[in-house]
Length: 289
Image (cartoon, rainbow, N blue to C red):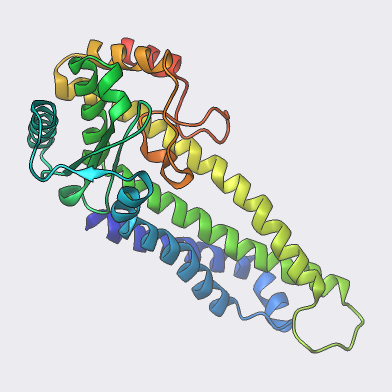
């Protein structure tokens, strides 16, 4: 709940900074004179930026189950399932969080953790991970996902995404109004925003959205290093996590649905937009612990 409160307060603070900045620069007077209500835009940006991210966080667990076809282990059917549940329970107790739901899904080697709250999260591992790794390596991967939950990474990423969304919505519309006012100067048209506003807003939503995605991806990469270190701490040694990463580097990573990629143990390959650092960098960071 503290992180959700931080999410709300941060978005409000972002909008306050934007409004104060436009007022200091005199931009608000110009835009107000041309028909743009800055306060209404700030509220709109806050609702869109915060609301979408918050709703996404709240539905993250059921959506993860649906999109991957994960089966929650309510009653272990095999010795392997009992071991997985017990491993998650042991790490959760050690990390000081509530017992997450545990699930298995069909697919190539991967795993993920998700959920809006630390004490009601979900940890899921793929059948490919279980089939291609030793128990010690699977244990390290589970430790990595439990560390994500303990670190509050799901809420943190929602916070960052919400702030970026707010900036994109607000700035694209402010600049759209400025461009539109410039293009229509000398015109007697009073019918509201013109084509310049709509074109500029659409273009800037795309461009600023890409820039925001780069920032969000950078933060996501940093949390992977922390989760790797968290797994080493939970296990009491770093070598199992190093071995797990090395094995993942030699396997074909399992593809998660696009919206789930930032939650998994492996990620996409694009440098700027990658949600996960290269395996080599993660291993090097662990070796330096």
